[in-house]
Image (cartoon, rainbow, N blue to C red; front, side, top):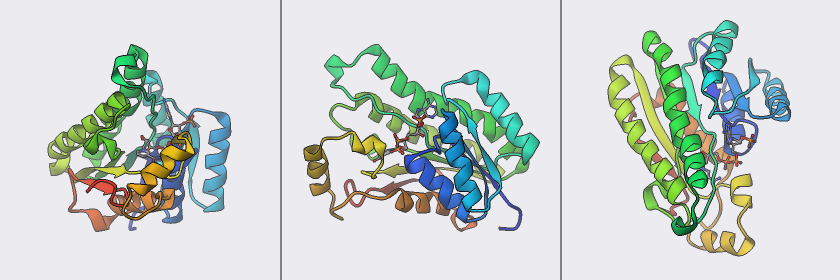
Amino acid sequence: MSVTKIALVTGANRGIGHGILKSLASRGYIVIGTSRSKDGVSLIENTLKEHKTQGFGTIFDVKDKDALVNLNDKIKEKFGSVSILVNNAGITMDNLLIRMSEEEWSDVVDTNLTSIYRITKEFVKDMMKARFGRVINIGSVVGVSGNAGQANYSAAKSGLLGFSKSLAKEVASRNITVNTVSPGFIDTDMTNKLKDQQKQQLINAIPLGRMGSTEELAKVVCFLASEDASYITGENINVNGGLYM
Ligand code: NAP
C-alpha cells in the first residue's frame, strides 16, 4: 500500500465484522471498528493492539442518525477520511410473514438496509472528493435465494444488491467501487442461534459440506478493498460453499 488507507467496519466486535477487522488490521490498514457496547470497544482495541495497527474502537448504533456525523468527525480528526467502508452490522428477527410484526419488519429493514443508505451517504462524499473509495456491503445468500421465515431479512439483503449496483453506477467516475459480499452459512452467534437439527440440514445442503469461517469471508472483503480489485464494481460475490450457485 502506498498511502495507509483508513477502513471503517460496523459491528466489528464479534462474528464476521470482527474477522474483517482482524484481517484488515493484519494487512496494515488503519482500522476503525464500531460496537454498541463498551466491552465491544475494548475487544476491538485489544485486537488492534495485538496487530500493532493504528485505529480505534468506538460506540455506534447504525440506527442512530445523530451519531453518524460525530463518528465521521472523530475519524477525520484522528486519521483523515475513510476510504474503505465495510457495512457489516446486521440482525435477524425471523418469523413467517403471517406472524411477522411491524416491529420485526421495520427493525430488520432499518438495521440492514436503511442504515446502510445513511452511513454510505455520509462517508461516500469524502471518497468522491478523494477520488478513491471502496464500499463493501455484507449481504446474504438469502438476498438472492429467498428463505421461508426471513421475508424481512431477505427483502433487506436483496434491496442491498440494488442499492450497491445503483451507487456503483453513480460513483464509478470518481474511482469508487461498490460491491456486495453475500455469505452463506458462517459460524457466528447469528447461526449459533439455530437448533442442531436445523444446522445439520443446512450443512447437508452445502456442496462443500461445512459452514464457512469468518476468516474465509474476511479474505474476500480484503480482496475487494485492495488494489487487486480495482476493476470490480457493482458485483455480488457469493461466499457460500456452493449453497446457492
Ligand atoms: P453476529 O455475530 O450476530 O454479529 C452482528 C454484529 O452486528 C454485532 O457486532 C452487532 O453488535 C452488530 N449490530 C447489530 N445491530 C446493530 C446496530 N443497530 N448498530 C450497530 N451494530 C449492530 O452476526 P454475523 O453473523 O457476524 O453477521 C454479520 C453480517 O453478515 C450481517 O450483516 C449478517 O446479516 C451477515 N450474514 C451473516 C451470515 C452468517 O451465516 N453468519 C450469513 C449471511 C449474512 P452487538 O454485539 O452490539 O449486538
